[in-house]
Image (tube, rainbow, N blue to C red; front, side, top):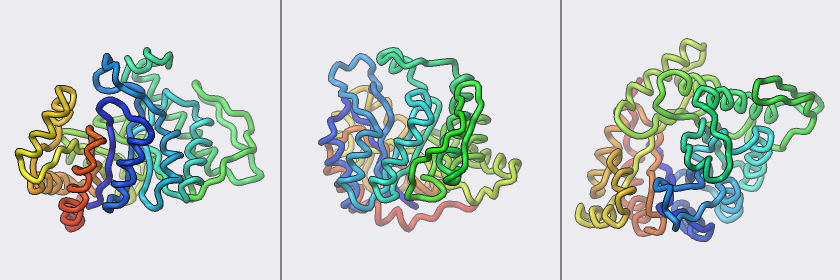
Length: 315
């Protein structure tokens, strides 16, 4: 099993705080460091929340880390026009030497959009926008030099673009699509993604089986789609230490951890075993207290080596 760290800062975070946890994540050996793409926290009324832009901070991390994968889980399709996003991700791909991944979804947090003047259409329209965005991203990333790329969608129109961003990763950076929906999300993943994230909570095995069936229906080998899960984690050397960490998170953190694991190293590993039995090849440790670097050290030194020996169940 492969492990990555995903941060969801409790009160937002300055770049320096994000840098500290990213560098510890890399040093202790996690495969990837990912961040959410949010401008508000779980508590929309929290005046202490300090928003940062995901791709701006990832660009900085690209120059201040060496080998850890960097990415979003997930970028909201509503936040950026697809042409701009294609260039932004390609720029971070260059800056990182080919270590960037793009997790992308419809966006879901209506209050966040209202707070910053970002349009928030109905869910069906957001899915239509995401589908067009994926087509445009791949078109701008893969059209050969000297040719033209055009796109005529309902939300996006591109007229004979001849200028394409340079990429380190070929044909383009890995795309991650995930969620718990039974139809449009797994279909988009089967068509466009390298990785499908089955999200948080129960039903992981069923979501994985569903996306594999859709791959087969579309003529894609399901084995070419990596399967991942997200796991909110609070870990301690003892259960009491883990519980103390949980209490420091307050009510929003406790709500988040209701769908994850709070316990000692053995309990975290047991949860990973269950996710492997569901088919997960990659797990993102969803971290809410990003200033608790000792917890990252503990996960890296005690959990990570044992997790590498966990084999995902065969489909």
